Image (cartoon, rainbow, N blue to C red; front, side):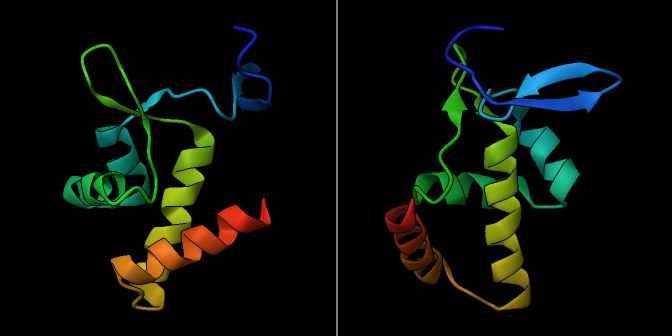
Length: 97
């Protein structure tokens, strides 16, 4: 594991993965969270959740980013929050950090 990834998280059968290490592709996140790929791309383009990019310019999400997507998707589905509302919520959450 490289030095830039500090937080560890046990994933499966003793394998450890940093919480902030980008490893999940957009299609994997889409399947895990039952979110359309176009919505993941929209959240990225609106800078609500900004995954890293691979050498081939593919989006790669960390465990932390997958959790963020799940949080914002829940707000959209359960509370009917629009993209503009998500931006405000993100700004408020970022201020608290």
